[in-house]
Image (tube, rainbow, N blue to C red; front, side, top):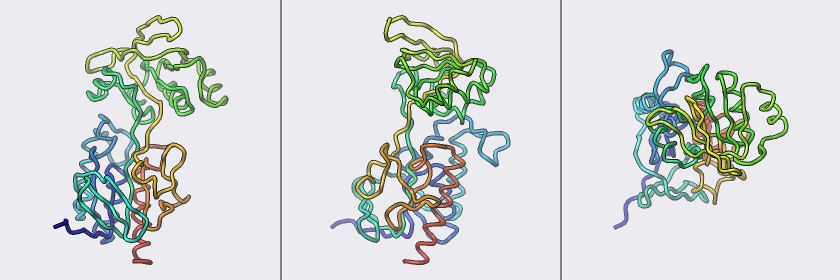
Length: 314
């Protein structure tokens, strides 16, 4: 006999600051939210060792602890937090249909998507080893740049985001090396001018990362010139990767409007998508700010929008 279909007022897909904030607001509004965390409960912040820029933590906090705090607060208001991954959706009719882990069937009056985005990495063993050890490899200069004040760092990337993060780091750090794979940047002319006019920022063209040096802590980077083959070791304390993010939105593409990269398009000024009763919060729709605090804010918006929809139409 097939498993009985569970019906929910509010389903939250994905955890992290956006999902947990949405859960807190939804639970306090008697929407009885159920959250499926995905395979990485807490999202990207669980890989961040120190968070110094989230309000309410005057002495800073490590990412996993902050996510546990948010989870505890959401559960305090009876949010049902479940470990599992939504593997299929059908938003063609109301209530919306969802399948979890390929087997559990759910219908929901409202759905809040907070699946986030995953940073692209170079895929080097040394990069991942030091990143997981919290030893100086990061994909967010805005988040972690402060820890390298007065130090030397390197950043990989050639687009507008990489140029912006490089110049941001240059305001804090003693020296910034920008590693660019080709003989020119992809960034706009304005951003290239900003990079080239920053005195403590050196661009290494035709250069690729061969290895991040160090065991558990970044001690430098070995780069290779892809024209001459020459290798060079550069002493740095931090290594930043700015080659883009992949929004975790693939399963929604048949129903939800996405941009050319895959970020969910929301109706400006709201968390609403093109499908009634389906809302988006956090980095799944944000390719610009990508901060915990902005994600939390949109989580609040999504819950309030969902509450209004339930009151008017369900």
